[in-house]
Amino acid sequence: MSSIPHAPADHAHDDHAHHPSGIMRWITTTNHKDIGTLYLLFSLTMFFVGGTLALTIRAELFQPGLQIVHPEFFNSLTTLHGLIMIFGAIMPAAVGFANWQIPMMIGAPDMAFARMNNWSFWLLPPAAIMLVGSFFVPGGAASGGWTLYPPLSVQIGMGMDLTIFAVHIMGASSIMGSINIITTILNMRAPGMTMMKLPLFVWTWLITAYLLIAVMPVLAGSVTMLLTDRHFGTSFFNAAGGGDPVLFQHVFWFFGHPEVYIMILPSFGIISEIIPTFARKPLFGYASMVYAVASIAILSFIVWAHHMFTVGMPAAGLLFFMYATMLIAVPTGVKVFNWLATMWRGSMTFETPMLFAIGFLFLFTMGGFTGLVLAITPVDVQLQDTYYVVAHFHYVLVAGSLFAFFGGAYYWLPKWTGTMYDERLGTWHFWTSFIFFNITFFPMHFLGLAGMPRRIPDYAQQFADWNMVASIGGFGFGLSQLIFVWALIKCIRGDGAKAPAKPWEGADTLEWTLPSPAPYHTFETPPVVK
Amino acid sequence: MTESPGRVDDARVRTANKRTALVLASIAVVFFLGIVFAKFIGDGESGMTVLGVAVLLFLGLAIGRNLRK
Image (cartoon, rainbow over all chains, first blue to last red; front, side, top):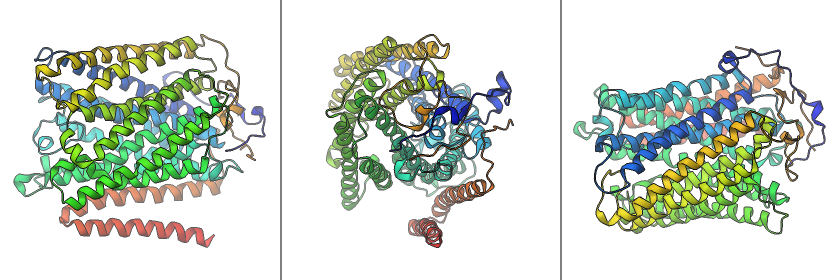
């Protein structure tokens, strides 16, 4: 890791004369910090939109029978909840962190392509409007699940077309963002900032960006073929015309599985910054962490068919994808071991970022274990499309990605706003989230093992008790997030203690050499890293 | 657009940035067209070959450029 010899005053000034104020500042900005803020606020908004859909789902499932929504609308809710959370909340949040932190962590003045950075962000709101607006078109929103499987996605109404266009636009935004991030990291590092001195957050984003460039075009290609099947008479996936719906599943999951790592690798990076800071020890096994992230990324390309064990594959295919999937546990285990080893005999304190990091570690590891269970082909055949799968991926993506992002937000809020967050609110936010998350999703393991299928608005009486518990937990988890909004607003309004340049004793990356809040322009003269 | 004074002015870095971006964008285009082309001709092996050759070509170019340095 890098050590920093320079004083902050050498690299920062807060000259606001060069940019417009008011709304035009945000529309025309090319500043990475402004764009990072836009991404983060957009993702928070979409998180609440997706969360509202989730709460409607949980309200419907509170007890057996149909009480609140029609089954068709329920299908749209599950579909849009997935799409909005993945493309609207998690991915933009990760890009927001990247925009704020990568230039400051590598000593660059801004992103390599500042105008493209602006464009990458401003593509997102129209895509989000299309996605959410699809609820109001004839036929309603897409309802075939976030995976957009044909034949449903070929047959349903124009909500599907809007979804396809939204996915195209968000994909283009992601690819542009990735090109920007890779170029910034490769070409704009401060003198002395060699690759093996990069903060781990930067490494994880570098690898994530490569993943995005490789798989986003594949998703774009597959939904383009879906579009031509729908409107231009082709039969890529339309069985009636000689096409193959299973082919779509292969192509989709060639994107879809790396996408899981696209959502989790930046979180690994954030956790790898937080744990050493609050353990007051350097990260254990830095090089092995880098290689583990790269291994996970490479392996993510050869495991896609574990999502479709039940479609009918040759035994050799089943075995290959089963063992390849299990192999991912090795580099993931290396990371978990290294985080634990970093904490071992450290002078730990448990501020909110560290609480979220430890919560992440505990719950993500549980999600990883249930992933191993699902990797076993004969077990997966039993559990395919049950609530066990729903429990598994929420442990990975909510307690994984989301908890890491909350941890990262509390960790860097003092640098972003110049105000320390309210520790009491942060602690409350963590514990209520942690408890209600488990109340919501742990019972889903039992429901899945008992055979409750996912994506249904009604269920047998035997599943009633645990569904009621999960719904209560879901509403508790949703309300808990208002505490975060409260803490965030307090920080933005400057209602709290003034943050010093380096509020965390154990932090050692370049951004902490800057004053808090970080000035509008930083590192115009590159720092020298020794 | 408002220009940020923090933007990179060094011509050499800007050229390098453009070159990196073009290579990355071309990878994205090859994958997009490759997947559609492979499915269009309906032959999985041809598709794999096209993508495999493209990946090897990019790797060869990247390694070749570094060897030249």
